[in-house]
Length: 178
Length: 460
Image (cartoon, rainbow over all chains, first blue to last red; front, side, top):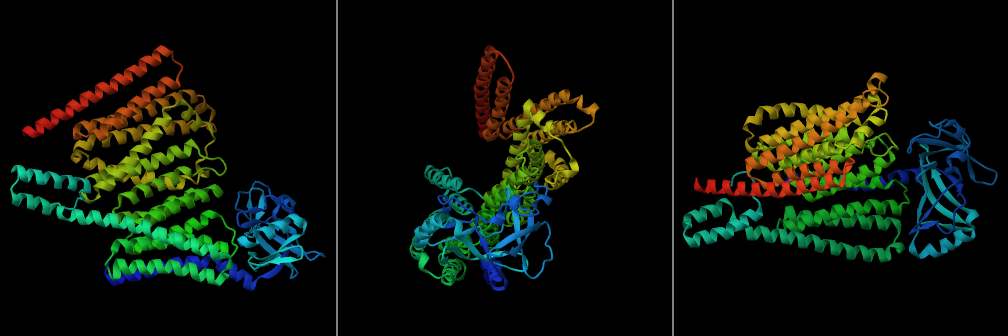
């Protein structure tokens, strides 16, 4: 290969690497820009195991497969990774709750939102289960989570494809946005 | 110099010996110069320092990177997300740009330049994780390794960089391991993807390291396939070992006869022999034969067979080609014969066990016990055939690297049988003694045979 061809090939390869890096947050950026805001209540968590290193492991009321209305329509033997579409409806308290779960994306009314998850070891994961936090804020968040374990919620955006992206963590009257 | 690559250790030894031969008058100065030119002995010092420099540069570059990473990490929390993205992408681009400049554009320090490009790919891998962290993306870890493999492969092809190909093989295999854990289909796709990604690179660069790693990754990928949630299964491992072993052994034996591909052929034959040998050894145990037969078997609900089938089918024309070339294979003819015989016996043994598996008709199931014993006998015979091939070629090629693995296979087989079946301590003692004495006597006879052959060659 001639020198100039080598340089072009290398430039192309580096471009591939840059595009891969851009693709990592690409979907999330799209969801943040176009998605609809939804506030989810986090499921009660063990305050002593919630922090894993420098991120918070989040679980939601809509994460428990067997607690989602309509889950009995599934055999329960679906392979991990099987896509599931959960219809959310805003409750009187302002939080969004699961109304039903479907194997395919359903058409819903304007006041409903469909969020896409995947089955994983008896749960449904939505890609919003990890929230990275700075080291300096770790102690404050840990303390807040212990004191307000039942008042922790997450603001997310859900786009028209059902993909979700984390916006911020809300504990008690504080908001954490990193 | 002729096309065959001569090892650096041989050339160093020749350089030392040549000086002695010259001093003793065994070769004239002109002959010594001709030999020195043929084997590029004057380049040895330069090559050695180049390798040393590359190693030093890579270690140095990694230490510098570690320092920079630590410095940035100390201030990481205070940096806005956008600045973090710019910082990590610039770090990667800086490594690549400096590397290509020193390696290809200015070409003054190719070793350092190559090291920096490799560092750029390592930074790229780290950046995938950092991007996920910056944007709070929760995904399966193996997807990051898959993306890393893709980026490393692009650079490997662009520059013919073996270290980047190495990163690509390793990260792609980690991707497979994670993916397989979540989906039983991973092992169906991976062998094809890995073959498409790495075989052209192997043909181009003829790197022994990449050949060994890629062939191993493909074979392990085939073996990992199993109905989801059941873990590893002997049936899958057995058929994958047959498929990969047959393909690698046939292709390797053919490559051994072609000078530019000989080193790669050795790797393929070695991996093929390991695959066939290990599975044949496993089948020599009654438990394996029973396990193969135990689980139900639905040929049309076995997606993991998708990569195994083309390997088996693809190896058939290669064996036909090898059969034609076999008379000219010289000292390696016994090995080729041993591998083929071992493969046929192994296929017969596995086929018999699978044909009498538990969901077969009643009249076949009644033969199950006899089938188990027959499969075990075939497994033992396959190991012995392989051992005979190794020992036969060792004698013909006067090469102890083939002799000892052959002897060890026989000993392993005998010792395993004595420990597998109930036999008195006296019998066990006799078997162990016989094996030990057999090894010692065999070794002495072989070494004396080597000496005689050497003396005969010297006389000629």
